Amino acid sequence: MRIRSLALTTDLALAATRGRVTDRGDYIVVESPDDPGYYYGNLLVLPAPPQVGEVAYWTRRFGEELGHNPLIRHVTLQWDDVTGDIGAADELVAAGFELEVNQVMVAEEVTAPPPVLPTRELEADDVLATADLAWAIGDRHDEAYRSFLHRRAEWHRTLVARGSARFWGAFDGGQLVASLGLVELLELARYQDVQTATAYRGRGLAGALLAIAAAASPAERRVIVAEPNSTAARVYERVGFRTVERSASACRYPPGVSARSSRSR
Image (cartoon, rainbow, N blue to C red; front, side, top):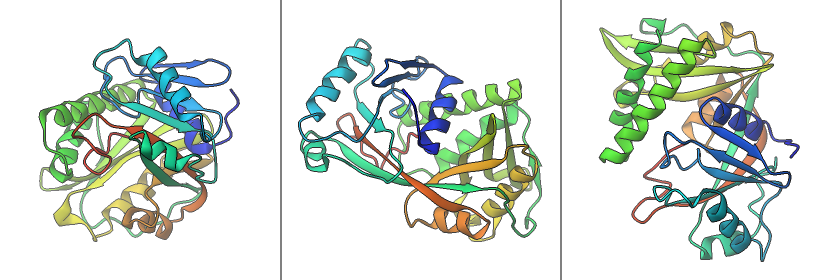
């Protein structure tokens, strides 16, 4: 299946570093065997937004491809589109899906004032501390989510150890208070997990780390994904990113979980 979207191109390249990406010709199956509860790591990629009458078909196809694992209790559909088209939105919502549209942003150059706190590149084992920062600032606090964050950090640690990614952090004393990663994907680089402790927001730490990472990357373009019109998107715009497309997806979460409480991207 030929992919047009930058977001999806980098999503699939990232997924391939962790699990399996199988092209069926008219759709793609993404699997993360080490984390069946990773909602956006176990999904189907469709060639276009689902249209009226197609939601049940794609839901059934998801079950045929991924439903053999009883720990996969969600259904996630993502599609190749650059406009943020939801497709059969009413039908998706009626079937229990939550819809998500994101800004896909690109920068050739990233500039920001110097950081107000000491920063350094993280060694592979240091990357594991990013899970604790994510836990501290997250809306969800249950053991399943904590395990998800630590598995994700372990994956990132592996990427750093392989030389496929680099992570940076800002520190107050010995405490990690802001961090992000950048994964090299041929001529593109994709930012990962830009995060700042609540008490340290508004000090320019995210922008400074974005610029530091960009300066260290040989990639021609840097890609980042943000919620539309969010504080994060405005930070990215200030340091040089521009919106080039919008991506859309739909997830039917397990009972008791929602997009708001689970940012498992």
